[in-house]
Image 1: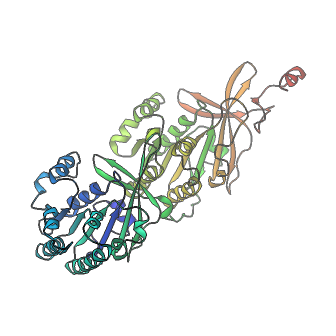
Image 2: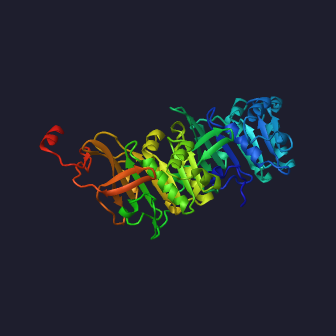
Image 3: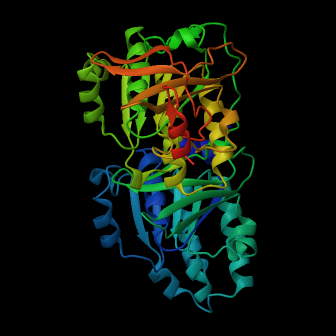
Length: 486
């Protein structure tokens, strides 16, 4: 069966393909959750010259106010008001009803449904109808309306500020084919909106609460990646060069195909430079790459790459490189996953960098959800045949720590970058801690940052503190030195 689109590809995915013609869907949620914006956005997206959209108001905002607020959104087309999207006020028909009768109002809705054959009908709001009739009368009237509108083929959207308890027992919800619950939660640094499909008859809708942002483009929904259950692909035998001089040799020729690599290290040790290397190597090989950054804006990353001779500006112009800067205050797990998912499905991306993961886990403030989310994100990327390069911050001074304790097993390869004491100066060191199903070098090697980028050097002898009990040192420790550390 051909379903009616919501106008958003991701929302259609959540709904199980869109709306079934002739169905009734309740859109519930508290004030400010986005019900009215979503409904109007759907109207402007689906309305055509042949099948218009009709937006009925009861005792909600006046039409002049609704249209005034619409002008802020890109989906609003003034020329479509009237010919394609029609606003009708039902308040006067409610007054005309005798004996608490909803018949005049619902008769008008039915007349439009069969005479004009609209694609979608909206009633905003149905919850306030309880002020006019009893629960029994409302149930009988709604049953009559819903059953008859179904034969017209129009999608009927019923909007209301319903509580969660009301969604479990009220007449609107027992009669509805679909229930979409919008939510609004106050939190710092920014509030959060969500969308959950409680019911959608005959459709494989996605479970869970999906993130909602309201922007100049309207209400944007970002599917919860755990609901998609992506299939992990089987990696091929080839190796993917990192571009970092000396590192590929330690890893047996590079990272295995479709693997996820984690780079651990304190601030300033060279994690971002290693990420730029990984991207630059992919671009040089004609691959398409995505760089997701939480700290460095695109302009700063491009300038950094320029210093090492990598022309990221040309790659962006050519469409082979996307740089997505997500400010920490706006960081959202579902939004991030959507960026990666779209890049993989629409643009055949083969290399993705996320810089950095520990920051992402802390700022998102969804500790209970994060393990399942991370597993799904890695599965999505691996299933698409792409390689993931992820950085994660560790402590600069003091014993080493595991910022992703309990989650390290999800990564196929782990590289650790650390500072090291060279007697009178501070240097850098690199170690390949883990490579799943692959042989690799286990020594601690010098790690240099030069004019041409990062490079892994010779093994460091006499290194102490390798497991993080003290600072890394590569010079012999005297008795006096040993006593000074205790």
